[in-house]
Amino acid sequence: MLFPDYRPRRLRQNEAFRRMVRETVLLTDHLILPLFAINGKDVKNPIPSMPGHYQLSVDNLVKSAEEARRLGIPAIMLFGIPDKKDSLGTRAYAKDGIVQKATAELKNKIPELMVITDVCLCQYTDHGHCGVVEGQIIDNDASLDLLAETALSHAKAGADMVAPSDMMDGRVAEIRGILDENNFSNIPIMSYAAKYCSAYYGPFRQAAHSAPQFGDRRTYQMDPANAVEAIREVTMDAEEGADIIMVKPALPYLDIIYRVRQEIDLPIAAYNVSGEYAMIKAAAEKGWIDGTKVMMESLISIRRAGADMILTYFAADAAKELGRAVGY
Image (tube, rainbow, N blue to C red; front, side, top):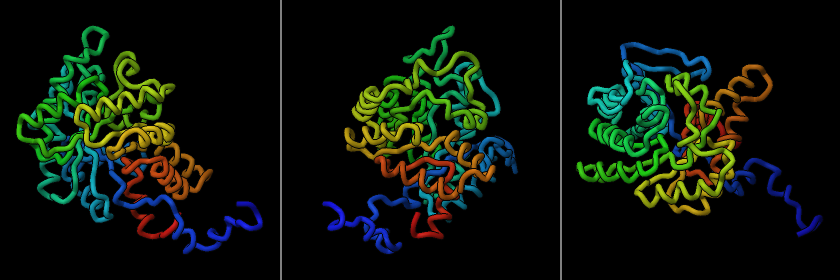
């Protein structure tokens, strides 16, 4: 196919043609909005490094979730900020924990909105790590029971899906087992399967008060240099019972999303994380980029790489833009 017999521009000359041959689409159906729940009433604490996002008390969280639903966003990812922390993260699996209270209220007020809950210990431990600490070591196997109890408490509160983000080995099987044993076999698991030890999480850690108090998370989160290892991780989680596989972060790891898509026949989620959001917002505020266009191009690139759904702090902005435009 050579010029002049083949002219690719023929099918680019107007928006109707471009829409007709477009290979990848982005819909509000593909978006999941992360929200941060905190104790109190009428609390709306701005997150400086994430403009437009807040730590929300349950009453305000419900308002934000209702707006997301009105925009056509089908699900939220719920993170909790506890009122106190300890070495075992007991508020993570407490019946009256912040995620448990927020989940129950959300399902009471907006039952049609899917509530996915983040299952981890880092926001709830005084050391800031995602598992039980023995000395300076994160004890993998001792962490599994607590993670499973957290997932079960979320299911009892009404969560539609649980999402373990800790990266402990074997936690998907442990969670699947405890859910099934307690008559929650219908609750799916979205596994943070290929979660990299990334510098892109900085704004989130400020928002969730979850930075580790010593060391880092390189002994359990993945090395950014590795790709083949990601296939082993996602395969293991799939075999343990995960229903959805997640790659996190998204934009710096589009190649991983693509590789996972070739290897795994489960739905794939990608997390467009806080650092990705913050960089675009900051550059747009400086006038250096068109923030809306870069947002949409970024999200479509994640879909093009193979993601079926995208967790993104841009969800509400993108949904509004999708409502206004037919093209990108």
